[in-house]
Every structure is written in C-alpha cells, then in structure tokens.
Image (cartoon, rainbow, N blue to C red; front, side, top):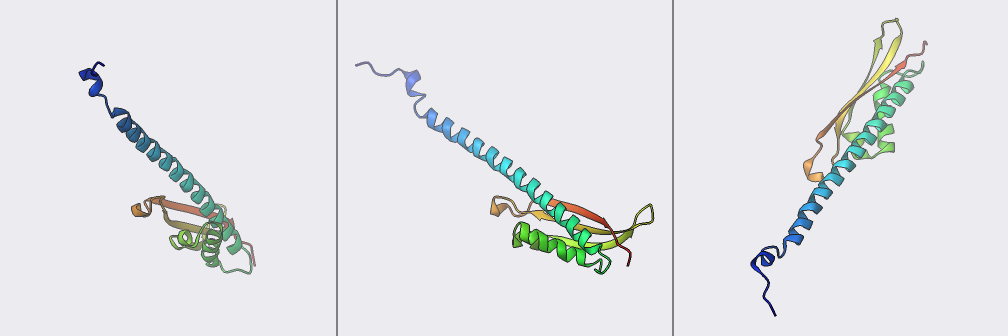
Length: 135
C-alpha cells in the first residue's frame, strides 16, 4: 500500500480547526443579533412605560412627580425588577411653545447584556410627554 504524500499529511486536522473558527464566528454573530433584539425591545418597553407614566401624572388629581414612580412600576411588570432598578426616572412639568403644561417623564439607564460578565454597556435614554389636565 502506498504511503500518503507530504501534501496530504499537511492538511490532516485542518477541517476541525476550520469548523471551530467558523462556529465561534457564527456564535458571536448570533449573540450580537440577540443583543440588538433585546436592546430594541427594552427601549420600546421603557418608552411606552414613560409615556404611560406621563399620562398617569397628567391627570388633574395626580401630582406630576408621580409619573416617575409609575414608569418604574410599569417597567418592572413588563420586564424584570433588575431592569427597573437600573433606571433613573424623573417627572416634571414644562410649558410648551403653545402655552400648554406638559408632564415630561425622562428615564435613563442601561440595558443588561446577554453576557453577564460584560455588565451594562448599552445606554438608554427615553422621554414621555402628556398634556396636564386642568384642575
């Protein structure tokens, strides 16, 4: 039986290395796509929650400062307590250009990453507005 030539021996095991390198690349891309999906979802949830908090605080019989607390409550119910604790929300009254009084809820924080060791790398800032009802 003939011995394998020198060019065949040099390629032995290269398929395993190629598979590992391609697998790592695919996993990194998959985690990146999942992280973007989580970020967009949480940003939309926090935006909707800030708007809901502003609408709640805009009621005539509710203090305008209550909008921040309501926003954090809604975020905690919709996502997790960990996400809600990571948010800093404020609620204030502002006048717009037409003279209406607006309740403005601003939230800032960061989105948790899928890899817990990386911490919270993705910043998040959203604002919700509602017109304050007259008393």
